Amino acid sequence: MKARTLLGAMALVVLSLLVWELRWVLLVLFGAVVLAVALDVPISLLRRLLPLNRPAALAVVLVVLVLVGWQISNLLLPEVIQQIQQLIQLFPVLTHRLASLVSQVPWLHELERQLTSGTYWERLQPLGAQVLGVAGGAANTSIQVLLMALLAILMALDPRSHQRLVVAATPAFYRARMATLLSECREALGGWLAGMTLSCVVVFLTTWAGLALLGLPLALLSGLVCGLLTFVPTIGPSAATLLPLAVALLLASPVKVLQVLVLRLVLQNAEAFLLTPVLLKRTVNLLPTVALMSQLCLGALLGLPGLLLALPLVVVLQVLCEEVLVRDIMDRWDGR
Image (cartoon, rainbow, N blue to C red):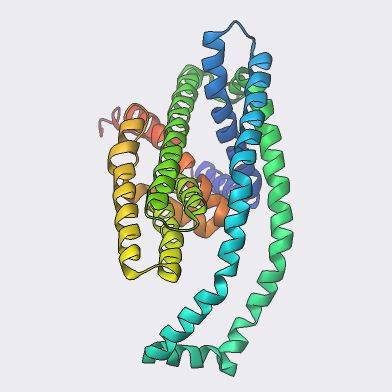
């Protein structure tokens, strides 16, 4: 018994080390699963409306996505590029404002002196090597995204074969239960993706319209950033608010800053406490503490990709915990 326990512990340690070494491969695989589920939602809807097989429905969905993306790019991309150029031109103004702020606050002036001293400069020098690695990291990320998209298309083309593969790797007594778990995970993840996509679009349009009504420059760019960062709850909306606030601080009066802040607080709370719960009430609703801790942990371990995929992973893990840990283990544990 002790030998078997020791072998089991060693196998668990080896498996944990293997998973850690392959963490980027597993991250790409899970990202592909998320994209495949995102594709499967419109594919399933299209097949219920039209007599199409899965390859034909997938081709229609991909063509529609390309055409819609092309039209949106033609409509919004020129203005977005123009506003990005305007934002770059605002950096000297921001530097001047920060310099005047530093000169007025004593402790900020002392911090500036310490940062420009030799000791702190030597500590900051290793950051140069990290900055030089950004280009290589961007190229690696592009390859991972392309691989993720290819895997997602292959999975969406024949999801049942992949599901049967996972079920076949499960012990015989649990295969029927595993098929049910996969179906529930897919339903929860698909519902979460659909709800968050609709929430993202609503936040983008309302923020764009609100900032435009306030007469704030770069309204489209600010609305786009706020909408995209809706996919990163808790952290994303708060970080997205910094852009319109900075623009209001640089180009407008303090009254305009207050108006932008009130607008973002109203929209952010409406999205967090009204829109998102209504959209996700039939699928999954994450506790804010669970969402925040998952983002912090995966962001610290895996960087930006881990931060972006933290919420989909927690959606799947929540379903597995409710069904396996609670119902299959805890509810049947009589304590004898």
